[in-house]
Structures are given as C-alpha cells and as structure tokens.
Length: 444
Ligand code: SF4
Image (cartoon, rainbow, N blue to C red):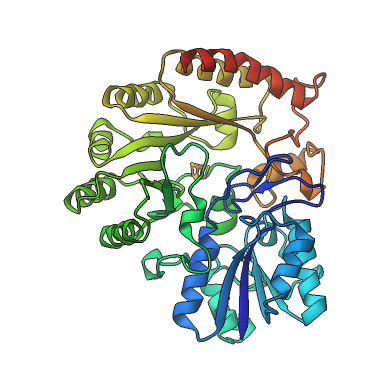
C-alpha cells in the first residue's frame, strides 16, 4: 500500500506563510517566508511505519516547501497515495482539508487526520468526510490502522477510548531520508546550526492554554528517552551532518527531572560531544545551580523558559506556576555562568486586563534592563480548541471569531479582553511592544 505522510501546507489561501508546530501552536507570519520546524511527530510516525510494516511509506513536507493547497495537492497526486495522513492545527485546518479532499476525490485516497484540531473536533472532522480521526498521541494508532486491525479494537481511533501514552523508547529515530533534518536548522532563537532533537515527551504542568498537554497527552506526564539512545542519535547526526554545530532539544520540558539532566550531561562529556552547542526548552521551576553548571560544562549555551506572565491573577487562571524571586535567582545564576536565557511571555490570557498585562510588560522591561534575558518572545494567548482556555472563553461569550484561520496567536486576540474595551487589541499589543522595545534595544 502507498502511504503518504504529509506535513501541513506552507501558504494559506490568503497567501500568508505558516510556521507550523501542531502540538504547540502554528503561527501566520505574513507574506514573507518564515522558518520551518521539523515535523517530529509525523517524522517518528514515518520511521515507525517503515520499521514495522512493508508498506511503501513517504513523508512529504509542504510546509518546508512553502506550498499552498493547490500546489501541494498536485505534488501529492504525483505519488497517488492510497492512504494520506495529515496533522492540521486549527489555523491550517481549512487548507489541509482542501488538500485531503482533492486526493480523496481524484484518486480515492483514504484520509487519516491526526493532531490538535481533529482531536478537539473528531465528530465534525469525520462529518467533513475524513475517513479516520486519531485522538491524542497517534503513532501507534496509525500503525494499527494501516496494519488492518479492526476499527473497534483500535485505541485512540475516534470514537474509541484514548490510547495509553506510548513508551518513547520504543520508537526508532525520526525520519531523515525522505526529508533531511538538516533542512530545518534555521529555527528562530538558535545561534548556531542546530538540529532539533527530542529527549523527552510531556510536561508535569497543566497550563490551560497548552495544546500538547490537553490534546495530545490528556494527562500531566513526563517521559525521558534513554541517555544511551540520545548519545547514539547525537553521534549519528554529527557523523551524517559534519557542519552541524549543535542540537536544539525542542521538547516540552527538557529538565523536568534533575537526575536525567545530570546523567545526560555526564554522558555528553564522556562521549566527547561537549564541543557541540546545546539549546533546550526548559522549565525554570526545576533549574538550580548544580544542574545549570552541569549543562553549561556539557556545552549548553541557551535555555528557553516559559515565564508567560508576572500577574498572579493571570497565572492562577492559566494554572501556571510563577515564582518571580526564583526566576530572578535562576537568571542571575545563568548570567554568572555565561548561559544565555530566552524567555517566552504571553498577553491576553484568561483574566488578563490592561493592569495585569502591564505587570508582565514591566517585568520584561526590568529583566532586559538588568541584562538577565538575552532573547524574548511575546505571543498573544490564543484559545486553541480543545483546551480549557477555549472552553473558558466560549462559556463566557468572549470568543470573537470562529473562523479557524484566525487562530494563529501572532496577529490579534480572539478574546474580548475585559478592561481593554476601547482599544482594538492590535493597538494595545503594539503599545505594549513599544514599552519593551526601547529597553530591549538598549540592552543589546
Ligand atoms: S509548562 Fe509548557 S508544556 Fe507544560 S503544560 Fe505549561 S505550556 Fe504546556
């Protein structure tokens, strides 16, 4: 059987480019091409299907190729797949659906939709004509489908119950033949030629806006890969791509478990891989001096942390742990050992008001002025369907749009924010950025 695994479209029907990251969130970046994240869940699926079946499996990345729905459909039709698997996020849903329908109608392809939007609206997705909808983490669900297991016995296949979370050590290394991992090295915030890797899955927290926590996993969790397998993968990548300068550990929470980090950093040094540069998505609540020093000495040069808000009111509504004194302690340790810190923030979150979001703006300004943050990212908190944030906003009548193409988190708030009734949110966001940018430019 010919199976095509297809990342989402790269360009919308409106001509805007997508930066697609379905288990986090997908952003629209205007008419200029952005960068492309390695589609790691689909890439794991691809290598799993190649390892465990005899089907003819091909992964094609229309997001990397920056194709719109029409061009992408033509590209996929060349392969005439009998099965097509796609992972749309909410903002790409309409365009991905157009691609799927073209293949369905032209060559009778069976369509499997996985990922956040289909998990949030499985019945509606089936009603759109999609043959199979997988809920949550999907690698083994899709494997069961293409192996012909009876539908009613497949956990994770709508309308059956969810599948237990998978053992990530049972997966092969992700796809690196049909697509090259080298083609994804230009991620924003990476200072070197870094290849994305995933050392763990999951997060013990439950932020209300989090797509992977609520749509993919369903429960708080954290699953590390074996250190031996990580060393083997880094070595493999280094040998295959000699120009590689580093690794970006782009999972949800690289440092959730201190013994894991201590053992990984020791193994990196022992394997002589500490001349590479490492960049990692971390949680600041579990960072301490011993862990950060071990990371720095193993080649880690940048940690990306989700700070999100300085408002207790917003943090409580987000179910996000904040501890500003601890944050500042961690940032000072980082500065002392030469570790760069990249902070992410969000405004327009549940219970956000002008007064509460200004606390976040002031914190950003202070951290930048003190030289405690090297990079920052500010997003507009977007109520992604299937998250408690979406349900909260919907129940209160705060959602301003149900046009899925608006759910991108980069351009405007989808909420009617209390206390900001007079200013369109875009103007409010622009004004907040003006408060921050001068300090940022001065600090740099
Ligand atoms: S800390 Fe990050 S990964 Fe964890 S639940 Fe919150 S947003 Fe999701």
